[in-house]
Length: 203
Image (cartoon, rainbow, N blue to C red; front, side):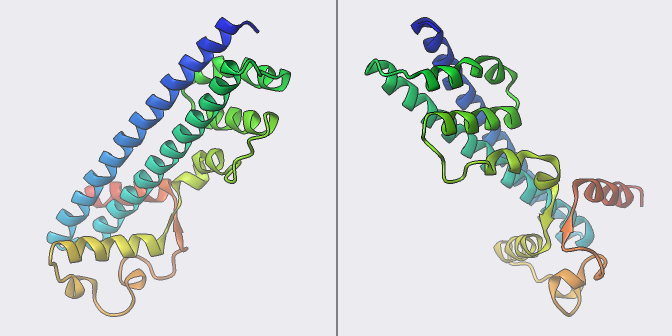
């Protein structure tokens, strides 16, 4: 691999990191929009819809954080390569790990990029303490489940921020047993959310 090839890949790494940061911003905006929907649903006395919007808001917030973490890992790898090039210390291990990056970076697939970052960190000895967690977080099942406790906290937060007393519409007892089915699992999948939202909209 020539020096020009490495520079091309470094350019693509900076571009990929920029795109990940852009995606993080978009996901954060989507999260804030869902939080506004929580407020509107509570104002209309519709706690079930409020819970669904809260779940969406948390998922989008987690998605934003995952994009930010991935952007940080790409930046760190870029800095490592840049330093090696400047010091003329590009090792065979680094050349090998960098060689397969170009096509993966061009795909803009977070899962694939996270995995190639794993490989880079392993091969050049910059093992990240969170190695393997970013790509796992982007996997469908992990990214689409929302712990009930987080949903309850967000509902309470939105109500408090807007000086709303939602105790009457929620009834007595703990929040997680007041809204929805008290026998349901402590995690809600994206499919569950879509189905419930569609049901509410058809009423």
